Image 1 (cartoon, protein in one colour):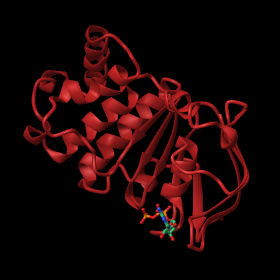
Image 2: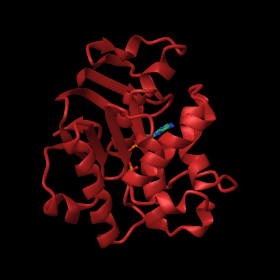
Image 3: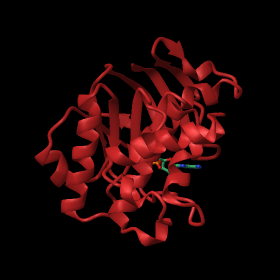
Length: 216
Ligand SMILES: Nc1ncnc2c1ncn2[C@@H]1O[C@H](COP(=O)(O)OP(=O)(O)OP(=O)(O)O)[C@@H](O)[C@H]1O
């Protein structure tokens, strides 16, 4: 699904964030991306999303070189990817269902159809009955599940998560990782950047380990 070939990234004026990365994520795999703060985890995820450009090397997504995409092609790439954030990023003045339906509305789906799909996504994360509430009425763990529903509402092939349990306690974190496992069991490829060693031990998976921008 994803192949990195000798990929490097340096931000303007900074030291290299990623250097000569080579790896392959097969379709249907679930992988952890680990490494200390500043090791380059978020940068790697942003390269896959087309939010940052590599300075060298190639990134293949289903056989297409996404380092060569024009900015008009990037939205098509993103429609195949879901992204879960550490800080939820919900719109505070929109209801839960409106938050989850938003990517579909932006992609031009009819609002009624978008609502049906958003409710189905909320069902998958166990929050269908909270659809009409505002985000501020939900706990941190529930808001994280809304962010996950929004990330999967368009049925992406690939799910990326950047420190998805950074703000949650151990029990809630385990629930969130179980959700990711359930999506993976239905065929979604999953890549999770995490510091959560306890979860990695409880739910072992293949790991990509970054150290100062290099894969170990
Ligand atoms: N927009 C940016 N401009 C300049 N340098 C950046 C930018 N984003 C990240 N960096 C630098 O790139 C390197 C990798 O950062 P990155 O955020 O990818 O690491 P990380 O492993 O995700 O860290 P954390 O676990 O703290 O989120 C760091 O040295 C960081 O300071």
